[in-house]
Structure formats: structure tokens, C-alpha cells
Length: 203
Image (cartoon, rainbow, N blue to C red; front, side, top):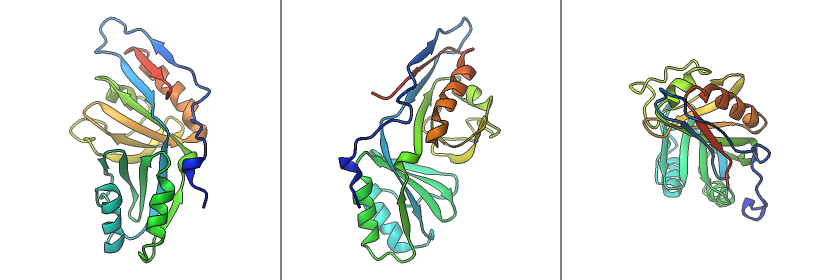
């Protein structure tokens, strides 16, 4: 296995420039959109009651595998529930090869890992009007009493499949397929005009 740490990363939004629109009168405040720095992403498949796998995941990420429609974070590492036997581990760039090697050599039973870092991009959203903006193109109930911090659900945004994660009261991460990321930025920018917004690519 070639370590991802020695390969140069390229953002899925490398060709999308910064965009902004002034805050109109009456807006609750502009929406901030950021492309996150490059992360390593690992798809993990195992049974949720696999005690050995859970113990190693705790050692590697400081959290056990989360339950349905939840995510957990500690430092630079996040685990996102995708299905009853599937999770997505997000880690700092260059960490995937070490995490996968640790899991593959630990004799955990029926466990499979795949690095999918190049398949996805991530946008962070923050602002008092972020829930209203996202609701324009998402059928989920995004009310703060329902879609609380840590909630993570696979859904459709416009015409793109995404993972939507609540990272705070009015902040979210959107994980989408690499080929759909420019479309998602354009979609979200258009939906944010009435509030005012700023989009910045990763540095």
C-alpha cells in the first residue's frame, strides 16, 4: 500500500474561486461557506457488536462507533454513521494508511476498510440563517430541536447525494462526491443570496 502521506493532495474545488454577496437589509447575518482542508476518509464495514473492532476504533479515534444517524468527533478525527454496518472515518491528511494498517493487522474478524479520500469533498456552513438556506434544497426536517449537534444523515441536496452533519447550533458540514462539489457550491451560493454570503476555498 502506498501511503497517502507521500502523495500530493488536490482539492475537489481547486478550480472554484472565492465568491461573496453583500448582506442585504433585514438579513440575520451572512452565511459563511468554507471548503475544508484536505482530510483522509476511510470507509469502514463491520458489525456494530464487534467488540474488538470497537475497542480499536476507540484507541484510534477516542470514540466508539456511533449509533444510527449520529457522528462523533475528537480532535481531527470524526466517525460518521452511514448504515447499520458502515461508517466513515474522517482523519487528518496522511493518517489513512496508518489507521487502515492498524485495523487490517489486528485480526478483528469480518472487517473491511477502504480509503475513499479522493472520492469526496467537504464544505462547512455557518450562519444564523444556515438552516433556512439548506432547507431550500433539502427535504429533511432541519429544525434545531430535531437536527441537533452530532446528527449525520445521508440525503439529497438539489440533485446531489450528500452526507449532512450538524457540527453546532447553526453550523454544518456537507460531504459530497468529488464531481458534484462545484455544483453544490453554486447551488448553495444561489440559495444564500437573500442572506448575504461568503465562500472561500481551502488554503
